Image (cartoon, rainbow, N blue to C red; front, side, top):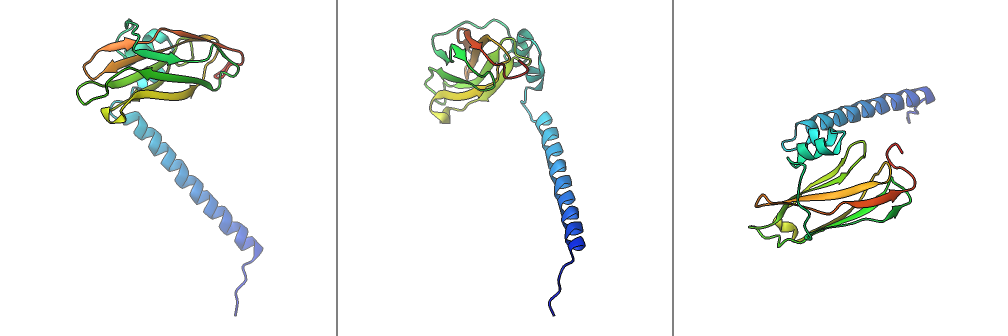
Length: 170
C-alpha cells in the first residue's frame, strides 16, 4: 500500500527543514565572523580606521614611506562607477626566498575606511603583480605601500581617480 503525504504535512515538514537550515547557516556565519576577529595577524584596527593617517599607522606602522619607481599602480583617470574601480599593482622584486615583497597595502585617502586591501605574499608567487576592483566614495587619491622580507618599505606615487558615481556612500 502506497502512503501519500498530505499537503499540510508537506508544508509543515518543509518549513521545519528550512528553519533548521537557516539556523545552522546563521550559526556558521556568526562563528566565521568571530573567527575572523581572532585570526592572528588580521589588522582589524587598520581596516576599522576612519582616517588615512590612522589606517597607515595601524597597518604599516608609519605615515611617511618613500615613493619608489619599483612600485607601479595603474588605475583609470576617470571611473564612471566608484563601485568597481579597476586597479593593477606591480612591484619590481626578485621574489626569491631571500628577497621578496611580503605585504602590500592599498589605500584610498578619504574613503570611509581608507585601507581598501592588504595582501600577504610569499616568494612562491613568482611575481608581485595583481589586479582587483575597489570601491571609492568620491574622486580621491589611491596609493600602494609595499614591505619587503628585509623590512624595507616603498610606496607608489598617489594616483588621482575621478569618480563620477560614488561606490560606497557617494
